[in-house]
Each structure stands twice: as structure tokens, then as C-alpha cells.
Amino acid sequence: MHMVRYFMYEHKNGLRLASLEEKDLQMMKELKDESWFGTHHITINNLNQQKKWFETMNNKDSMFFIVYQDQVPVGTYKISDIDWVSRSYQSAHDVFKEHRGKGLSKPVLEAGVDFGFEVLNMHRLDTEVLENNLASLKTALWVGFKEEGIRRKAVYKCSTYLDSICLGLIREEWMNLDRLKNYKNICNKSYTPKNNVR
Image 1 (spheres, rainbow, N blue to C red):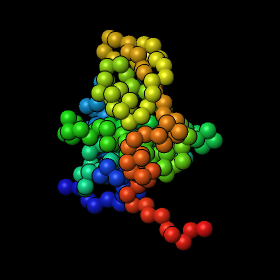
Image 2 (image 1 turned 120 degrees about the vertical axis):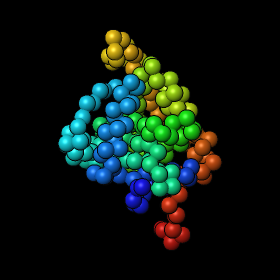
Image 3 (image 1 turned 135 degrees about the horizontal axis):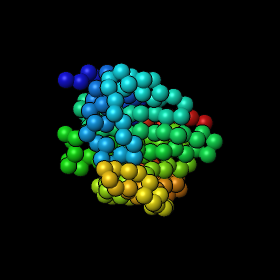
Image 4 (image 1 turned 120 degrees about the horizontal axis):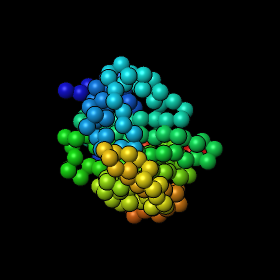
């Protein structure tokens, strides 16, 4: 049973973003333990180490969100290496194991990406996907990212070095996506423009 959360961003696709809280750390540890095959870094943490990691999140260079469908946590969206001058960051997402195979990966990433452009006013988002994670690659391309290059044999996983595929999405490309037009250029369900603004 999960407590009611405050959602700072409600996407028109039905998903909502809530800032990571300390009570989420066990859930995050379980995600790290089981999803390392498709991640760039291997993290072997106990709960105390998770708390230290938590203290580094949501600072001026990074943000971490739990993505909800109704009151159920279904995934995560991570923002790191924010460059406030060039207006860019590294983007990553996950879907919790029990919610995979339900078509949630695309809307989870869509909600995170749209938050980055719409609320944080970013100019460019970057992401990287390992060559053994084709589902994440397809999701990134579907959401609007474009493949820009490959870091060859960059990540070691169980006797194999894997390529890391680099992708980027620029604001102008995002603004021309059909989904944005379908949302009438406002993805945030909780935002209503005021008529008395000069």
C-alpha cells in the first residue's frame, strides 16, 4: 500500500511525476538489483548506501522522479548532468519489473521528456542505451530521440563489452512531434493559462 503523493507534474497521457522520497529507497534498491543487465553502471548497494545516494539526488545538477499511474508507482525518470547554460541534461527512465510488458515504457519516457522541455525549458536532451537493450532503444526513438553515434565497446557486462548508443532530442524537433500537436502544445494536464496575463 502506497501513501498518497504530491504530484508536481501531471501529463495528459495519464502519468504523473513525484519527486523521489526517502520512503522510496527500498523500491529503488530492488530496481537496481534486478535491472543491472541493461544499465550503464552496476550498483551493489545496501539500504544505508541507498540513503547516501538519496542525499545526492534532486540537487542543482540532477532530479529523480517516481512515475505514477493513478496512485501506483510504475517507473522512474532520472535527470542528471544538468547544464543550465546550454540547457541540456542526460535523460534515463525505467519501468518497475511488475509493470513491464504493459506498454508503459513509452508513456513513462514521454512524460519525463515533455517535463524537461515544458517545465525546465531545456534546449536538448541526451540519453544512452546499451546495444543489448533493444526495447529501450525502440522507446527512445518512438519518443523522438535521434541516434547520433556509438561509444564502441564502452560498457562491460559478464564477459562482453557492449556498445553504448548515443541519442539526442532537440527542442525544435520535440515541438514538431505529432503528440505535442495532439496535446495542443501543452502536455501538462494541471496547467491552465490565465486569461488576464498581459
